[in-house]
Length: 536
Image (cartoon, helix red, strand yellow):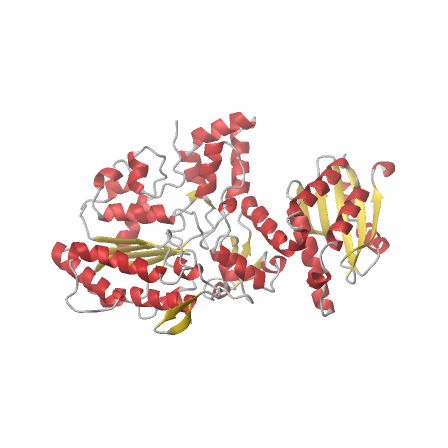
């Protein structure tokens, strides 16, 4: 039976204990032979730590672990190098002094091996001396691997945590940045003692402030050559996992190809370069094969607190961020702020590249797949409708029941009561533009949450855009909403624009729903239905 390495980040354990391994060692070989200092950004649980462990074992010269893999035939000169590996992922840096203690303890452990400095120097200087002595003692340059380099910053980003330094109270975010800057500055001073350096993390924006005075790393985060360095490609999915795909197909009572289609919709869709190679989320795939169920796995492992803090303060609405083209500087180079949360949303894996427009050097950003879209929308809706005290999911189930049963009047009652329960302070908007944004975003979140059925928001047709169409197995619902307008006006637009025409021969019952949304009350003023069984 195939063993899936869920949560296994040790290359040695993975190989020795017989877990399935998607062979990336041809790319590892290219990486270590082509350059010296690299930086790689990928979302959480995307295989960064396993990549670091793989490279560590390669530089330790442990050829026996690589038997049968691509690198075994490519590498002709296996040698052992002094390797310095530090993983920031396992610590909580919201406590003052934790970062200082972790770096000091790590450098002290290396000093036990290679010797301590004779004079007092800062921790960066101590690390530089360790690297020099390791080079001198082994006759080989050093390898430095730093996993999740940015976690000490993300843990405290946009928080009020402080630390007392020399009798003064400092922001912990600023202090951690200074500590890291001092630690990473060693790479410039120790350049002659370094064979290879790799830093991994989620974000890229922290590089500017943290790596000042540091020889510029080769950022391969959007490199076509290394797009598949983490994650699983379509070819790898079908080559390595044919057996569990067949087992899943048998359990679900569907074909092999149908399983592939469902896996693709749920977990595929990440792109990390203009080559647009499809990359699957490896954590979710492995969990799906282990459970033999297609479900949400990556998202429910927890959303980063730094992202939630930023989104809570942001004035940007998701519907205004997704499905748009951006120059790379807007989602890669800028530091995320409440006024511009896009970089952190993209770099955390909640949005990805969906198209590249070469003539303008712009990228289309959107949700990578259904797992991420449904999870992120649910999270955003819970925050946006937080006055519902956690009852959003219950309300949604009632709405889906009404849709499934063909009860549009019940749907109208549900919409009205749900929206009316949002406090006035949450929906109060000072001008017409803000009232329109509130109205549009409210409908966007509600209809995006309806993921059990095919839902099209602002569906373009020959004579206009339909606000929303929801298709269930037995019914089709065509919605048109008017801000401070009437239900009759909304129904008239459905008729005049022929929004129901594509469903003229559809055997399902078609309901046309017009509603007036009041900016004064923040809820439905009028709700009228046309169509249904009586007109068929």
